[in-house]
Amino acid sequence: QHKGAAAKAEMQRKQKLAPAEPTKDFGFVSVTSGAGLEELFKDLGVDIIVRGGQTMNPSTEDILEAINATPAHNIFVLPNNKNIIMAAEQAVKLTDRNVIVLQTRTIPQGITAMLAFDDSLDFRTNGVNMTKALDNVGSGSITFAVRDSDFEGKQIKKGEILAMENSKLAFVEKDVTKALIKLTKKLLRSGSSYITVIYGSDVTDETAQAAFEALRSKISDDIDIVLVNGGQPVYYYIISVE
Image (tube, rainbow, N blue to C red; front, side, top):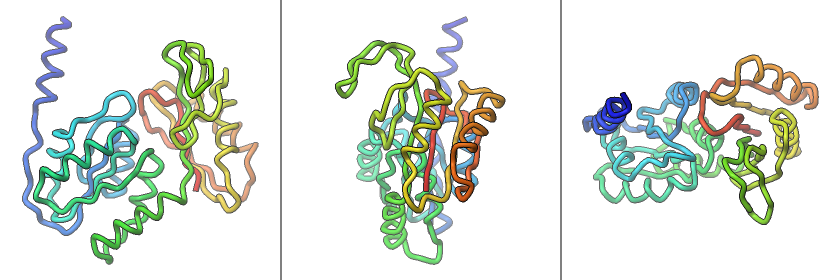
């Protein structure tokens, strides 16, 4: 039984994306995981999704394949994780397409970069504008400790809730909803007007809705808050504050 499943997974991994002839000026490759997030990036204009993230970093080859399968002359790559940027930059050296690797270290940064794209501008100008836009977003995520560890000087017990602010540990909490509220408040700046809360595959719709309502009651009415089913693994919630 197991052997069959493993063989099937290996076969799927080997199914290569066919290279595509460029038929348009601009194209986009984004690394993400979770059905909801994949759909969100597709809606924003991404051509090819490379599955990956915190626990499964795609290889240079995976990213190269996606670049060559994008039917565009000029391609933006969004790694959306600091551990994937290097593989993306290696892939650029192996393709003859024009590629800019945007330094997106989080999913919220990836979304913000896509929203900053303007097809009336040229490739380089868009690269500059999309990079500048990354400074306007605060990124948070709520996950859990898979084992006892000493992380950034803090003693962490297995199963504790970890709140990450811009990829660094902000605090440890026992309760997921409390962590969501506390971290979102921490991410708010003067002038913040928009919060997106993206819930993962380990959170039910009901739990997410209840947490969202608890958060809504603690945040100023001037700020728009949106709840999105991202379906991502590892992270209970990803928070974007703009």
